[in-house]
Length: 432
Picture 1 (cartoon, one colour):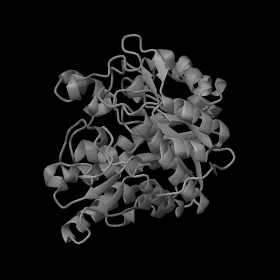
Picture 2 (cartoon, one colour):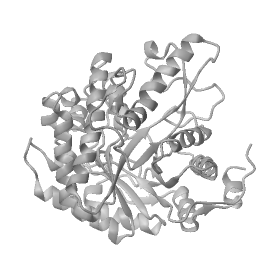
Picture 3 (spheres, helix red, strand yellow):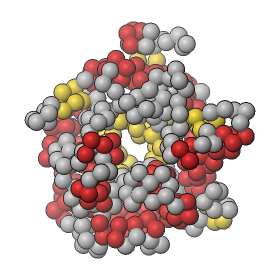
């Protein structure tokens, strides 16, 4: 066990939280997720996003709360289906809404990190084949260029597509996100299109702006290990998961190719070097077995003695250290764009964050250029297919009124952010 001491983070470090439009805004009625929810039978406990956290109308309140809790950054997403509800038709009232949102972030001292695509698709895009449509990269680029032009110099950090390989795996391999496909050939097509879309969005943002914003990737990475290192099947499946989920985008952008298993190393036009930063979303380790695909166990089976979140994910802070060290080899600065745990044990939530910050600092002390930590999430929210049955927020919402109630982590995080570091006393209280 680590002997915890005082740690400090680099000057100018970003501290904040992350959200996504569909999970917090409410009434995103023109995207594929909204329609899928209304069908019934897809969401745990029959949940629907509905008004969600009412963030669409309460963003001022939420940003004031974040400011008071010591944050200096916030990651949000723009809902594409609001901006372009019909193909080629821009809703300028919604553009103005998001301009007010970003201006509010600045007023509250929160640096904006803006995601343009966070899982949801406009219905017209879905009806044109979604990510399987060869025109998908150009349609996303048009949207990205439009938003970059409209929001001008208000956005210093753009993150075109959230967790692209989650879209590939959850929507087209495991089939538990819409359109609920389980087709490996389709998944490989989507993986090609989504890499090209990222690159075209990157270029579109650069061409539409003059203030030289930083544009990067946001990758959800698990720390993969074979469940049985002596099992050739487990090792092979682990290598396959690693190649697709963790390495595909990294190698693709680093080398400008479509790497295996999606391609055979052929050139990916315009892709090479399309990152100014790397965003890491990290939650857990995955122990991979040869039976995972047949069992449909997307996250694998944790060790029997492991501490688990309510999502069933193993709490494994060392994984973030190993992944940060790996990402550091590519060159661009790194931001932790999501990290958190679903629990109703508030001491466990504090312990989770502290242990991950310790491992983050460990990577920094060994040369990793990590520049920020954005916790998932500000408030408890609609957790996709899990509905309202998960609790990731550092702030809870009172049933009925939706009044925000900071949890103990909110105040611990405030003290950490203001001090730009963690004390041995804080470690001792929660970690031991």
